[in-house]
Length: 253
Image 1 (spheres, rainbow, N blue to C red):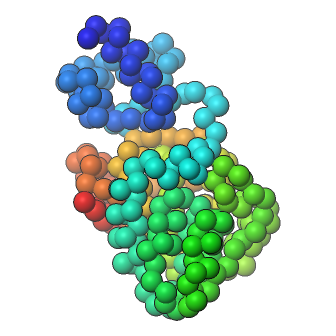
Image 2: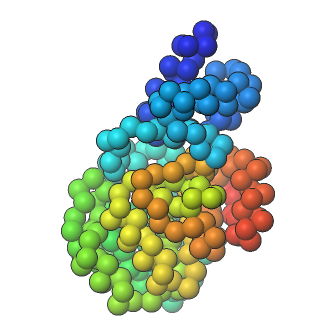
């Protein structure tokens, strides 16, 4: 494959997936990681993408929120495994908050019917938990975002401010070790920040593709997270940096 053709394909992949890692591009095109880094440097100079820690992210302006149906099928197996690990951290009598991520929905599906209080801004999570009689469910209410089937806005924020929980289970679109957690939607980012603030402990549930990427709106610094659950594709450099920051890391197969 010609260099120009490879670089064109790289831009297409980045825009399609919104973010991608150097290691993955190296495997896809059967070239060294150093070659991919040179490609990304050139493409960034041409304003076709933005380099990030360990990869590249799309600079397409109309990204917006990805629809729930699309997010459901993206890295589904990793998300299910991460959700199962998160459920093991939940004990009877806990008071928790779940965001509107698909991983949180998988948590809701996996949760046994046991004495528990769950606060959420997700319609999908609420519907799933409504089937479980012992779980006390509290919905924030607010302005509905149809793409993510979630509530945001001032009413949702005021609702959250009335509560305190043991554990917050959150996900996000990007995890950058210097720039922190981020999301495409500013309203979602604000709500997730508040979810962290009302919790004693915050557990981040993200598949490895999220590391090194940045979305539009910052949530909190990485050091504000107590525990990260991710899959085994996380690279050694990221693992080492998280250990240096004293962040507990749970890796699932």
